[in-house]
Length: 64
Image (cartoon, rainbow, N blue to C red):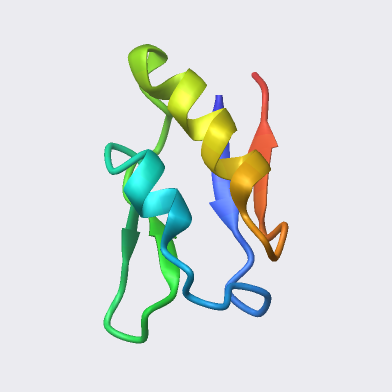
């Protein structure tokens, strides 16, 4: 499973980085970034929760 953040839509709420710090961080511009190439299996549930909780719907999951 992979995720990506649309930087144009991210408003910097940091919900994703709070719910799933193994996958998301906030950069210097307070925009979410993905810090892994592939979501670790043990972080998938938290990652899905972060995607669902994003108020801007700017995170996209790709299943492989």
